[in-house]
Image (tube, rainbow, N blue to C red; front, side, top):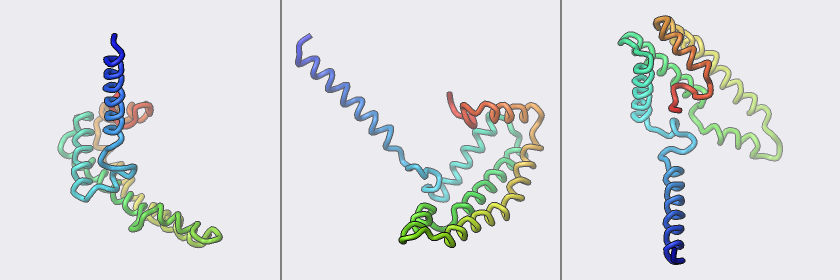
Length: 157
């Protein structure tokens, strides 16, 4: 093979690999994918998640409503835990001075624990209502998925 053909093929291969790498890394949302979505995008994401789980478990309409209620409670819990401000900025503010701000750190932890304590009963009740509405075969599917952590919650592969 002639040298210029080899160089051209290697160049095309390298450009393809580079373009593929840039495409793979250029996804729309960064590390905070869900939190950077708008409220409408989050609602659409929850709807797709509900539809996906419903199709895997063959849920009826009542079970879908309970699953949707559970996902709404999970979202409320997440928003309450995250708070109104950026969590990373809160942590950075703890170490912004010469010394670690222990009182502010304790207040931050107390706020997060209060959010968990106040919203947990509702979340547990929503999960219990959803799980109890499942048939024994559907419950077996849920237990099987939870037991095989290698693939996570219904991921491909």
